[in-house]
Image (cartoon, rainbow, N blue to C red; front, side, top):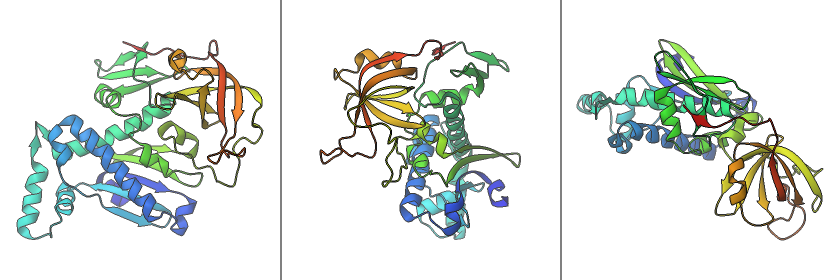
Length: 319
């Protein structure tokens, strides 16, 4: 905990599986790449020059947790990124780099804002139940319009600093995909930012994972929704989470899992207006696997009807 407080912020994976050291090199590499991509995106949003600055993020592995933290001494990150030893000359050079302004943006502040932006993306995603929504209606304002209250489908409001709402609107819905893909039923992800020796953190659990990544952790030996039998007509209620223009499919969130759903007409255009809505789907279960055999562990849905459930959906953005 002391190491975390002495940093600007951190990401952490923790859980029972990590008590035995089960966080392999691939997961570690994916976590670091995901953090690097997210930080560089939000740094470039503050100043394009910052995207190309070299830095490396130190990792700490303990029993039960894997932590990557941004030290308060930003010069350390730059030294690591430059691949230089801590001689007096190079330490001073790194320090000067860390103190440099980029279009009026301080390097240390840029890291802090980037970590705050990641934290707010998590907070907003959990509030909305998705990372696709970019327009809001019935917003509220507070503290001289510096905070924007955005409603979710339940009518609950989350007040977000306008700076971080703007950064959220400008980022990809996939920005936390790699970071969230390491989550499983035994591993929780957290992002924490330190302000005045206090940690402000957000957590993502297995139940919330599908908000941030399409990658599922369904054991290959288990069949997902065995009650959905190939060829049977079904009527299901769930949420439309995404569209894919390439495959002409839509994501349909059913009981916490996102299933791929295809309109039997092959045309998703009439259904695009239902994004983020809770809908009733009428269709046929498809369990054809990659080899053309019936027996896919994860079902697909071929639907003939998709209609919003009356009274279940909120509106999108107008200030």
